[in-house]
Length: 320
Image 1 (cartoon, helix red, strand yellow):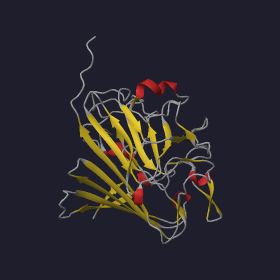
Image 2 (cartoon, rainbow, N blue to C red):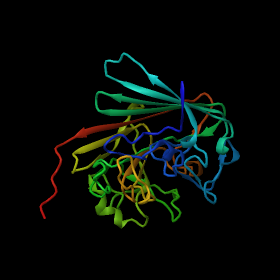
Image 3 (cartoon, rainbow, N blue to C red):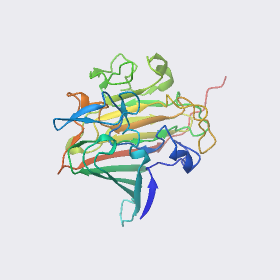
Image 4 (cartoon, helix red, strand yellow):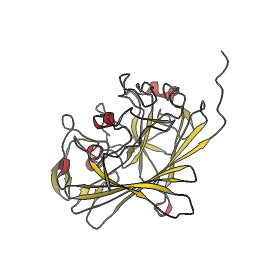
């Protein structure tokens, strides 16, 4: 078995945004293509209760624990092996495994996590994440992949059409921490129940862009449900996101900058790509009404996400 630093979706795809060199990922602060954990999003305060005991999670800034802490899953060394199957569905893939020690970034319990990436003949990338723990802990693990479906020639995602299949979202305070409220999207810039052009609404936000969680209804029998759809008219490429998780975080690359150069030579400036992260609600350990992020011994964390791609005839820009 081979070893790798973190798990990354590398940027050799036309529509996926990533860095130029492997070394860039080793010092990356933006989680390009990373598996994030143990718990994604912001946790504030960073001292939480787990099984009735106060647990001090390592804060990244001030008293906020963000995306697993200073040395989260994105910086860990994972073992790697290919998935070789005689599958009539045409599935092939790769499996990563990581053993997170007890106390890592403050989290209790040794945790064994496996992540499978599979390509199917339905034009899907299927990501399945499973984990077991030796002590009661917290877990919410998404893939932090950035997408620009227009490719390197599309400077930003303003012309992308976004649909989010959610009636509610979780508002943020001035420090980007969920307030604990669950609010209807109707009449707000967070209403993407019908496909909307991102550039038409992003300027109405009180923040630099979207970094918000939408509440996704669960499917029958725990099967993945359609959470979102992204479409770029100039390329004709569409991407549906299906998940078993209760939340979808849409992040529009608000902190990217012109100093970041992608694998295709593109400038990865603010709003040049978007993440559609399937996960639990951010700050769930501090908000009782949010779905629980607790994993206990004997339970298996089992999270599946599908990125399903399609192509239509590209739309020509209007003649000026």
